[in-house]
Length: 95
Length: 216
Image (cartoon, rainbow over all chains, first blue to last red; front, side, top):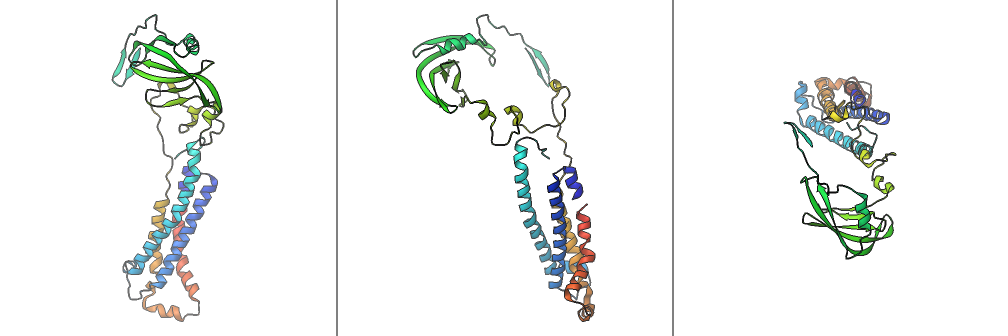
């Protein structure tokens, strides 16, 4: 993510916001996976692949994707609103 | 006239008759003095057909129009050119304040401030042409011979890709951690630690792996 925002040469505020959001999302998804793993405990399976493909694993994946969608879309919309006006006018590089 | 295309260039000789007027302030002066009912003919050169053509200008009536925030007394002129008739509103000073065009547009005079006061911030740009396009940074060498400008993408936002990575890591490595205790899970349950600490011990060793993947 750092490499991405650095190459895009975005403003420092947006850069740190993107990094903070990525960090928060990574921790949140990991925490959510831990919680779902505890909720849908399957002690009989020894194979991790089988545990993942169970109902809880699928639900965890869907919820993770939903969480990503809920977090990314508002941030992307705000970023678009932020960058839309200067791009239509003068002074901002459109990338 | 030299026409350059991808296939080559062609040279065409165009003769402009002596009586054809391309531009003359005398025409404007003469039109500004037209009164309703009077008409005049102007022989001009058509750059599209490359032929001379006659424009019939006729003053129709006097009319007050409201442009640039105030009312102006004008003379309505009809200009007949190649079978098409357009109307123009000329002020007493000889300035066209409003004009209908062949393609259906009506052009109206405006002052400098309104011309550049577009919806977006022009940041001091006085030239409307410069204010409209996507800004170009750097210098274009030999602008007269420049045929194309290449846009180079210097970065790509990896948000969606990183989201997929986070989901995969969360699902593959973190989710099954508790279940992998298997039949020995009772030992964890009987141990003198809280459930929160057990969950954190499962979250932390694998959970920090996701930020490490994502942040760089």
